[in-house]
Amino acid sequence: MIKNIVLIGLMGSGKSMVAKALEARLGLPRFSTDAMIEAKEGRPVRDIFKDPGEAYFRQAEHAVILELARKKGAIIDCGGGIVLDPGHLPLLKENGVVFHLKTSPEVIYNRIKGDPARPLVNVPDPRERIAQLFKERMSLYDQADVILDASDPSIEGVVARIIERMSHERA
Ligand code: S3P
Image 1 (cartoon, rainbow, N blue to C red):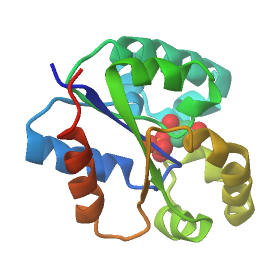
Image 2: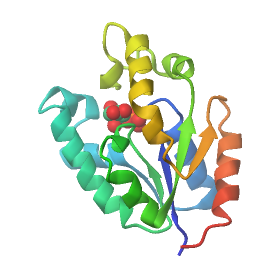
Image 3: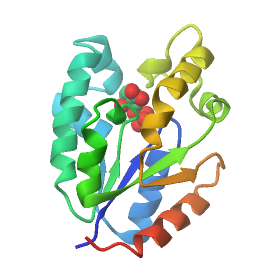
Image 4: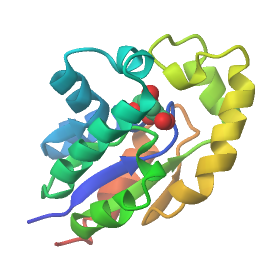
């Protein structure tokens, strides 16, 4: 059975688009932690963040990660905050190869500015918030198995590199 393909990185790094392209190319099942939480809770992430709040969202996210980490041969599109729990990456690495889709704060800002679905950056100074998230999280994302430059708006290069790397993997 082949390993999971696990995508991590800050919001706006292109994880969802890359996951969908991989699904189309490889025909593997694709899971999004955010979509699974939304389906279980029956409402969008931004509403869960408002009430009952981020701590509740993180618990729901943890439950989803425990479920997904057990899969084999799946594409797993992780919400940007999954690295906040230090247990998550080691767990996801057991059955999977973890890819960090790495970009710059500027690229992230341009991709997600004004998006109401991003509660973490719906603040008066989103640039400052993104810079802060970079500082807090980059070393965590860099604990991925593979770090890929995802700044280019074309995702084809990223998809090709993931497929190439996975061709060497057998769980
Ligand atoms: C978050 C990223 C979001 C979503 C939530 C929190 C984060 O997912 O899980 O808004 O903490 O970085 P995406 O990275 O898919 O946007």
